[in-house]
Image (cartoon, rainbow, N blue to C red; front, top):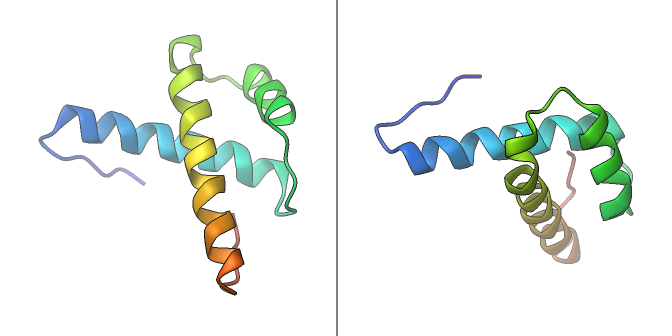
Length: 78
């Protein structure tokens, strides 16, 4: 999927979220993924090192949103 805007910061954030989502989906759909597990998988990916911190933070954001949704009885899937 290629979503581009005329706002570079938004485009970078979207890229980070999609990269984080790809890694999370590859790890499965079970709750309880630790930051250490995510970081290990991210390091083994072909993701550019300059993106690691941003993608790591994007993954935390995704998982936080999924946690809030599940606490409100919404079914969530990576």
